[in-house]
Amino acid sequence: MLSTAEREMLITRLYWNTYLAYQMTGQSRLPFKPLKTIKRLQAWRVRRMVAHAYRTVPYYRETMDRLGLKVKDFQNAEDLAKLPLIGPSQLQSDLDYFTSTAQPISRYLRLHTGGSTGDPRSVYHTPGAIFQNAAHGERERYIITSLIGKQFGYRETVIASPNCTAHKLQAFCQSQALFPDRLRINRQYISLMDPTEENIRLINHFQPDVIQSYGSYLGILFSYLADTGESFHRPKVITFSSDGLADSVRQLIQGQFGIPVFSTYQANEALKLGFECENHLGLHLNVDLYPLRIVDATGQDLPVGETGEVVFSNLVNPATVLLNYRLGDLAAFLPEKCLCGRSLPMLSFTPGRTDDLITLPSGRIIHPQAVRTIFTVEEQVWQYQIVQHSNTRFSIKIVTSKVVDRQKLKERVAAKFAERFGSEISTDISFVDSIDRTASGKSRPVISMTQKSFSGLAEKRES
Image 1: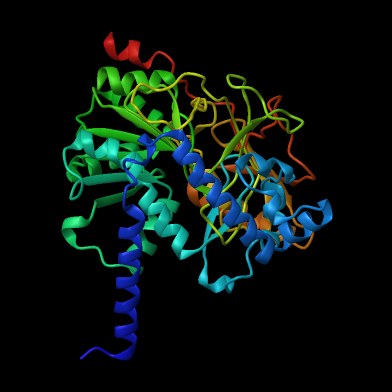
Image 2 (image 1 turned 180 degrees about the horizontal axis):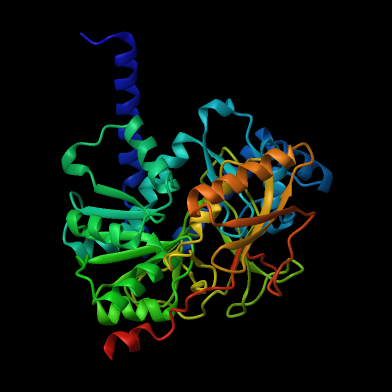
């Protein structure tokens, strides 16, 4: 006999099972529908989200009233440009201002990022948006499962930071819905902070069909394999996100190891922006979910083919509502239509970075996420930048709120660096009003003067 609490939980799980099944219907084929059909769906989502934002989100209600804008003024994605551009710093300084009051915040799931651009931030998501995200994943998973040869029951290794977003999302879905074993993906989570040789051992033991990680971590992993020639279980597919993949590493993985590589475009603020297809020309954009603009420094739209800043609107998540949001990435719309048959517009790949890897006194190369996660739990840190001057010396600049206890924060950060990288590490921590940005307008959260280049890896493997 089930207790009242057990019956309620069973009903909740059955509800979310039904919801997920409904949302998944037709997702794998939607990218192949005519663009006019996709645009109609996009326009419907725009009207619904703007109405919701005006009704329940303080920022949009106040902004639209100030500008004299009405809900009826937003009929399609192009109309979203009537709203001001917003960015991470605004979101970070007053999260509640952009969060819907339709439900208590306790009912939302909060996702916090260490900030790949040096500005850690949080976003609230509704349970419905999280399950929709799982359903939208069928668009990119259709490509992966076609190469694997089966839709469920395959093995996937995720190499990421502890408590990564992917793990949180999967854990949430499994806690709220029922997933029979035959419909599960068997996932292994391993930490990019662990030694590369240990991760290779775990991969060899698990023997995954898919490996998923950051683009830059794949550089660490495969440069190690190229250097050592160590035995390695080769998956059928590799996927990456969060940052770019250096061309030399992609050539090494696909050419020398014979493993196809696919990128996905996502962020905590927009969980399924786009994905790479079999033709590897660029990223197909899920514009029905996240209309995207490319703008110049003044916020004006740029023509197809010109590189500018990525601005998106999230039409999926009604918790923290983000319309006309500057993500901080640089890219360009691609003019050509992909021969894969998908009608979704295409975006250029974001460039891979290889100049922010950390070198420890032992000679070990580690991913910059090991540094970023030090700031993940520090909600009063607005921005940071770490410069590694030598294998043992770091300087750290931090922008904080005015109310933070800077001495205690300084002690916590120094202690975490010593704990994570060794007692011989020295840290010079200072508090500043702002972090310098590059000519492209982006700040570099990690700058290493001891970086290891991945250029020439493919040639080295052949020699």
